[in-house]
Image (cartoon, rainbow, N blue to C red; front, side, top):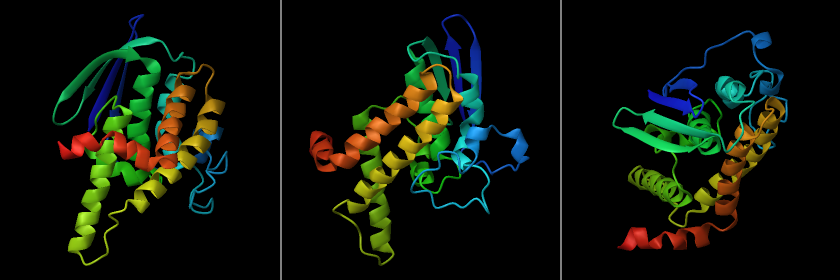
Amino acid sequence: MIEYHITLKEGRVFQFQVDLARKIQPRAASSHSGWTQLEFNKCSNCPLNREQHSHCPAAVDVEQIVATFRDVISYEEVTVEVRTPMRTYSQATDMQTTLRSLLGLVMATSGCPILSRLKGLAQLHLPFASLQETLFRTTGAYLLRQYFALKEGAAPDLELKGLGQLYGDLQTVNRCFKKRVDAASEQDANMNAIGSLVFVAMGVSYSLEDQLAEIRQFAIE
């Protein structure tokens, strides 16, 4: 369980608990907002079908968060405390940065078959991670997966072709998902939080080798 405690400058406090091992809890379709329906701005690479999934798993999981902050602006000053099973993080930041971290965690641990490929990283959640930190952690996790593939007799992907494909898929999902969130929001905090996830995935997918070159020093020193 990971807990986010968000205190706005005006004094309002919001708390969200993210169960990393949560199970999908079925609810009546009518109890969800229209923007969470699977076919509403459905991701172009989504493998799900509406016969088995009436709603987008990731949208359903972030529905409450998006609704809570639908009228909050990006640069609203907040103090955030993130409690993980191993340690507690505290930071004074803005709402966009806070929501990028919280929404990213919830989406990565949702039932989305693409976003859930980041679930391993979510188990060791690092709030407010920079682009370099995210890329270092993602690459490390991917290479660890290749190590276990080798131990099991499969051919490892040491050229990281699959990592580039992963970021390409994430870019597509985040870009399409932003359209859902835009429709559910009045102000820009939610929108820009997802927009920043789009930017990260886009930058890496277009220039993975260049991005890795920038963090080479962390791997050889």
